[in-house]
Image 1 (cartoon, rainbow, N blue to C red):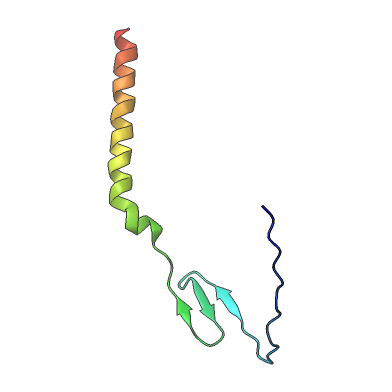
Image 2: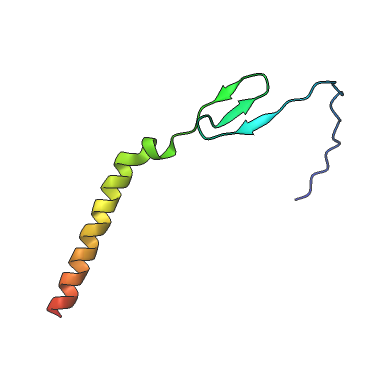
Length: 69
């Protein structure tokens, strides 16, 4: 599928903006707008712990099966 789109250029402005990717704030722009870090690990920490337990149990069962064989 091929789609042709005519792109209209945006009007020119005489302003500049700076974007800083930092450690304490994810993004700080030149107008002092701050964007916080997305907390991916904190959101899914409980699910990650649960899944790691499941995998650990599977590993122990497999070792036990192999030892009995």
